[in-house]
Image (cartoon, rainbow, N blue to C red):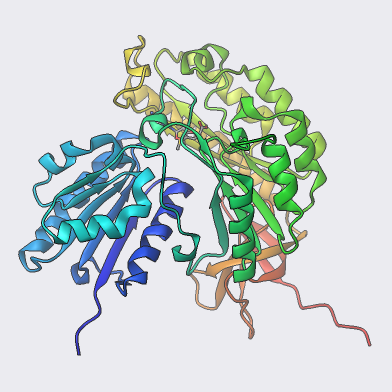
Length: 445
Ligand code: SAM
């Protein structure tokens, strides 16, 4: 009996990369090529990369260096570099890694089968750039092991934040028509998903491509579809939030009370140099409007420390903003200069040790805030969507509507992945909650 062919796929970066990986896995599985967790068993290795910070890019090159050694014993093994580093590097990646077989940019994910076939026929393929017509077959996305159904609504980014490489790696903005988006959401609901996550680098900048309508209208349409128990969207750009969108978030109880709203800095001077197009005051006003519309809203944010020219006073303003807003989660990064962006030309580079020390102070502050917020949830109970098994035997893990991680004992009837149960919070840590699954209420006769 011949052995089934296998692929190994490693993913870094944002939710859009996760979904691109599901699309690539699905295309290979359609050809009878099965997933494996062992690179040494694979006939195809795909690295779906992120280039938002230099470290992520270095990691993918070091992995390529490891995996190419597997070719010694497996001459037929194909190795493909995919994702944002693929788009950024193109031909350069083939020159740098002699055993690399192909390079596939994010806008070319739908062409994987064709690229693999071309490589088998002898061509070292570089498929990058942003073609007008892009293959996207919703039936071949492999969503196994997922509790939520992700749907890209807008690709690319038209902003010009001076630190960010995304507009280069994901190309110009391109909204998908609402009819296509709604068809994909219905397809996911038919499949059994209860949580839908709309994706875009600037998700709230979605516009109906040929007609009227913006993200507020799309939220209304998706939230009203029967079967959407939880609706989330990521990543929102602060300046693109309109009062109509805020009202939509307030109107639909099935829009999760959790929003990721990257602020990047608490200092107006730094925000200006970053080219973000809003001030600290405007960000705070938006947070107030959102909290008025949804008092239970949990907010998360991204922050960059050590941006060129950031003084101790600028950083103090970031700490102050974090104290004022009391984010549920903060994702904070040391500034990393990226090729082709404007920020590396700015003066006032911050010493990396100073940036590291600021990052530690920021994490310490946020950890205390998270501990307090999570502690205040003890004794409350939440509807929890189950995302997997816990690390401790007999436990399961899930997410509350405000996206907090909660662990609980599975009991004699574990909840299937993507299923829903009610859990009371018994204890709290900065990054997770521990709870007790409530018995189902007795059904009265
Ligand atoms: N499109 C979103 C936005 O503009 O808010 C998110 C873009 S990026 C995929 C995710 C996060 O990575 C950013 O919000 C930012 O905090 C961080 N990031 C992007 N470029 C960076 C850089 N050059 N150095 C450090 N962090 C960076």
